[in-house]
Amino acid sequence: MYSERMSTPDRLIESTRELLWERGYVGTSPKAILQRAGAGQGSMYHHFKGKPDLALAAIRRTAEELLAAAEGVLDGPGTPYERIEAYLRRERDVLRGCPIGRLTMDPDVIASDELRAPVDETLDRIRERIAGIVEEGKEQGQFATWLDGEEIAATVLATVQGGYVLARASGSPAAFDTGVRGLLSLLAPRAS
Image (cartoon, rainbow, N blue to C red; front, side):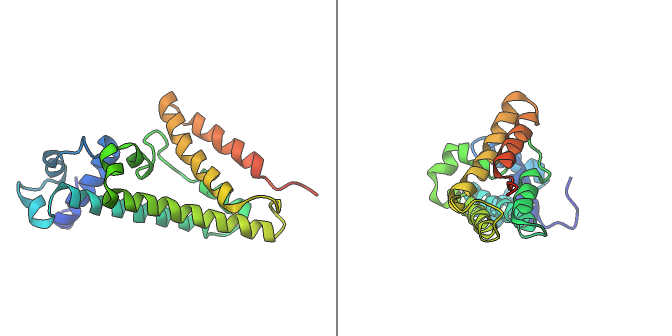
């Protein structure tokens, strides 16, 4: 499943990332991690203090990748509206849900300040970046001056995360796409 050149710690982290996304923290057992990683018994404890330590490494890696993907689009070319649109429309595995957002539904992750921190920090950074783009759009006259960047950024994130929930509930990405289209129609620059 993994490249033979991938180190054992990396295989453990990657398998944990996948299992957290599929099953959540409680459903991710050390045995399942080891099986998916193709690692021998005891290797997890050789490289990590235990499941919480390994889960933290996996969550951090997932957070870094998600943030890099979001910033790649948000910092890309285009007007502020076009960059927000690109973020909302970027390719996602909608029916699988957000690998970071789904962790907020896991009571063990939420109960742990350490495990929750990278989730919160990632969402905060994306929200801050979007808020900055909204303010940039206001300065350029693309967005109404009365819009609040923080409120719009929270709405963008709520649309994405809520869109995942609606899509998973219906078994179709159409619900996600409908939410995105609705938000974009509200944000669309108006002709003067």
